[in-house]
Figure 1 (spheres, rainbow, N blue to C red):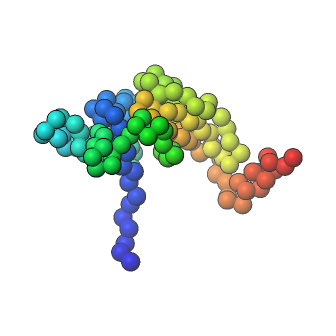
Figure 2 (cartoon, one colour; figure 1 turned 120 degrees about the horizontal axis):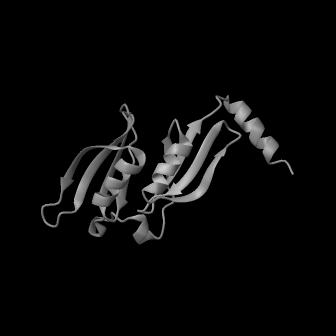
Length: 148
């Protein structure tokens, strides 16, 4: 087996130009590069840097099976954005057009998290570590919460 270097999410959106602008404004992403389709101006490929992580994205190309959550009626995938200030980042995302699906709250597993839907149909879990816990403690707390 080969050595795996990274797993990089590759998302499809309607209006990739607007999506790049949103991710830069709402989440502080840095655009690494893009390739624009010479035939019609769509973004055929773009790469954004979020801290140490990369996200790839493109406009829809239905003829290649590349369709957005809007076309599919939603997405089963949630992108997890580790942050140092969930409340501030949540406010910024909302200011730039994200919809809050779950307000920021402290979780028993040591995270403060919120869930938003971006204007392009992708869910983002904003998460901040507030307490370092061993996996066993996380499970113990979850077990305690779910006792009926």
